Length: 77
Image (cartoon, rainbow, N blue to C red; front, side, top):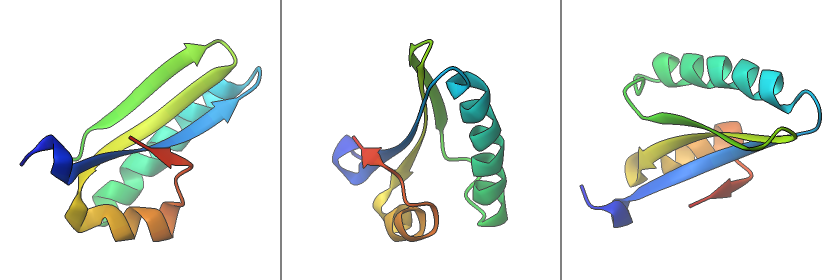
């Protein structure tokens, strides 16, 4: 699978509770992926600053619609 066929979706969290909120969302994201049979997709956590954390999932095109409609990510790379 080429990088062109992969997309990483991100959810950003801001503020003094950004880190714990991102960690909480990550647990729910992993549960969602498991529920839909795609638990092997890579999940990434990024800390851009103490006040900005992000959680992402890298997925092939076959899952783009599911992720976009069910989870409404804020951005993708």
